[in-house]
Amino acid sequence: MEISDIIGYILAVFVGMTLGMLGSGGSILSVPILVYVMGIEPTLATAYSLFVIGTTSLVGGVHKAKQKLVDFNKVGLFGIPAVISVFITRKIIVPRIPNIVFSIENFTLSKSILIMVVFAFVMIFASVRMIKPLKERIISDGEKLNYYKIATMGILIGLISGFVGAGGGFLIVPTLLFFVKTPMKMAVGTSLFIVSLQSLIGFTGDIMGNQIIDWELLKIFTLASIVGIFIGNFISRKVEEEKLKTGFGWFVLTMGIYIIIKEIFLP
Image (cartoon, rainbow, N blue to C red; front, side, top):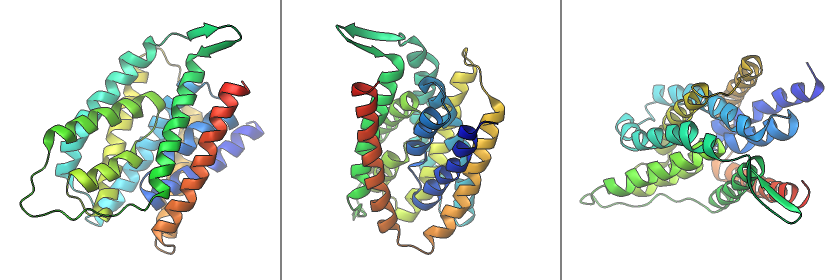
């Protein structure tokens, strides 16, 4: 086992910790760790990330369910279109992207660079959502759910999650808050189950393709992440959630900017 692998497995603990503390953000760490620390090709790294985040979120979701903090009706309402979308993205869309998207003069946009740059922009968007205080929306009793908007959001989040290997919790939690009448604590638990479903189903799209999976690496990385989610749950009971979210948001913003600079200007 190389030193880079050992460092990657140690950092995998922090992937689970972010999920345990915030209910989202794990994939924002997992993809850069897999690519820049462990040397995994970006397309394969996004597949690995889906498995890691899906499995870790499932463990966290079961823990939240025992605390009665998961609304399974909303898991189905939001999760079904997201699951369909992420599977189609991993099975059909991603494999059809050419290795060289386009080339002009001294710059070539490869598939790997495209994935990492899109991922970086997703990170920056996520960081803004984390830094900005997220307040629960007060909803009147007579207000009806907008099923069309919920399904559209599910499809969109599934598309983004499938393309960059993100669980999408940073988008799912606000959607549950603002469009599906869900209290914050319930939104976090419900989000974990939705993330686990769409991530693991998305990963099956890679298994059914031509990807060669390093199951030993994936097993150790995932186990380390699962350890982290329990550490994160413990920390979340000791530290104010808003402070954790804001601090992590600034870190994610810095990482997103770094990835854009590295991939575009310092390839």
